[in-house]
Image (cartoon, rainbow, N blue to C red; front, side, top):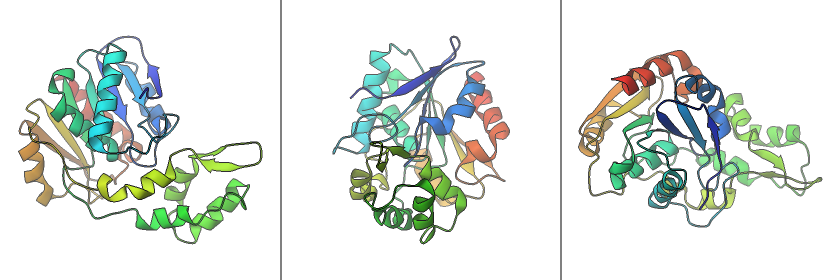
Length: 255
């Protein structure tokens, strides 16, 4: 599968950035532009997200293979791979399956463990939208608000709306497949060989995605990893604490 991407910067270490569930490469555009001052940055849409192709096949080994093909097709040598949330699990699988294809790994607020499904309420809210009856973004927001109180979460989802035709709105991501595979996407690592290269895990202090009880699993699968916490950030660390995030990322790349 040929993934959609945007390339920023013309020189320096290659960085590949993978977004999380329901996201797209646009979520990383601001930070990508800052990083492109020192690095060659590749922002990538995972399959079934953004403007990448849709497919009924959606699991981590498949997405890791997508990234392998992307790296090979674009002749990207020894990149640092950064993945947030679901994208972090894609990056973890990629590093474990194809360690020869990357220089370092950075995982943002996700661990190689099984999570309870966090998104049941969000999926239920999106499931309730009938686009044959709704033709304004504001009306979609009102319907989502019945089940999703957090304005920021609704705004994040609404970024994925687009005009499928001149009269009909739709989700840009492949909602049906994401809905059907959510338990598999929430599952732990499906690998046999640990990644022995350099790895950095960045946790949000206000998030419960990387807590102390998950540290042994991180060390098991990534024995050369370090774990850093940005205390005042939640799950969307790169958006909530961009300066601290950039300091950790640049320091890790340079060391």
